[in-house]
Image 1: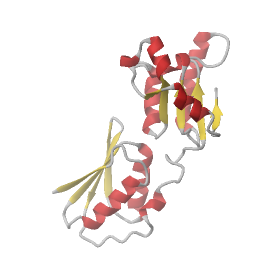
Image 2: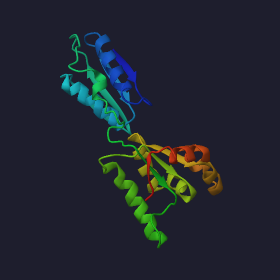
Image 3: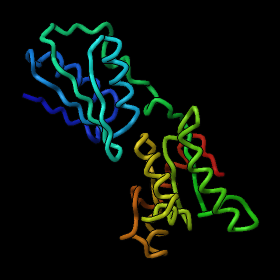
Image 4: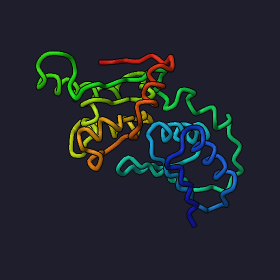
Length: 205
């Protein structure tokens, strides 16, 4: 028998709490499958299991991670509280800053070069020590989230790492791409103005 613990859409520390609860309640011989849809939470749960000598395996498909645990029927007493494995600044590498993208290309001058630079910039972000809390796109930057583009795939990857992607609704309507959006939450200018004036550091590449 397999117990399914579906943690999709949950932010840390909830997947850790649910994993600990399942381990305490599972009977001997019963398998547990923890389903998580962001890489940082998967890493946190993996560290929690490893530190507590709980054998497990991980399978990943299209950004969804399935952690399989076979219960050994031993009373589970973790060394530390599960919540301690959740980095305070979710998603583990996140920091207190927002990236505001105002164009589909980066910098002034040649637009073709600017598009190449923007693609490289988005691809480089997952490698930073600290990820942004959010990427806000307005004006032509909303087209970066269009289906079938390399930049949309880069934004999907960042979103899976816990970075919120926000798109200006007026801009999406202006370019007529509402049905072609691959990733991101369509919002309004009031929300964007509040976020950019909230006191959080804003980076405009």
